[in-house]
Length: 325
Image 1 (cartoon, one colour):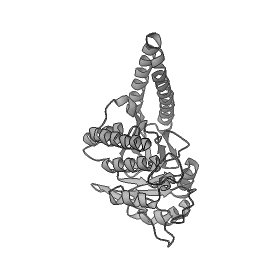
Image 2: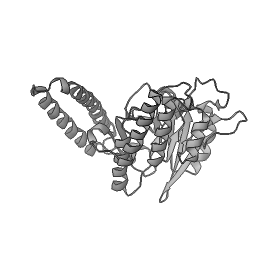
Image 3: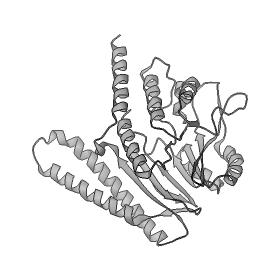
Image 4: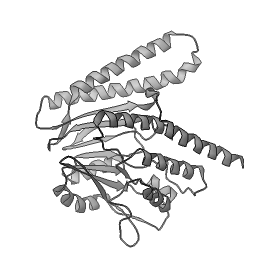
């Protein structure tokens, strides 16, 4: 549950700054860190139910069903869906061949129609309650018709990154693909053909924010403003590191803080280098839909949401009490 309270506060700020013109999505696997079978009385199941409750309060527009999310059983997913969590999966079916969840969810801003499609990755569960169909085949059937009624198609892919890129290569209809490859962390946006691909790590350390100025053309970088922001952040981190390293007092207590800042520094170097390459590649093209992207370090905000704090503390108390029984 780490980072959820900071995420709630970050999302509220984004809502205020955009006037509510926001699409909040998760590409899958938010409930469980790994695949398994977790009964309702387990700590993992109780934690997952709390995460689902918080996700509902955060007003997600779509959450892809990942293979890890199936580890608590279909009843958990159905119950949380009834409570308002918008699960989506185009390739998860029951044994009668019927979709268990909507294959996509549509949202409209003014005259812009957005379709958000979910794909579930392979599960190791021995449950006979569901069938996971081949994602590529399902998308090949679904996307051509969906493209006719949608301006922008977003794919939430709870699959390994290489499989997500494979879907893109097979389909010209996907405009934006957000991955949930649990073997990788943050993935700086890159283009695969005309599709933009990205991912935010799943450990609650960052909030991925993508601002799009859509004109119907493929997505391209708007780098100048973002580079300036990243370079300022890079300078700030260097200053903080210098102060921590040159101040000998409480050296032991600062080791973890220095390590975290070093990780952020390396990630910023990668983001800056990627944007500089993109700037050279795209130049001043006008025939693209401009996007700006950033990973917001949630630990640095220092701001949480009181309602989410209460839910998390209550869950931790219940888990602690259960262990003493």
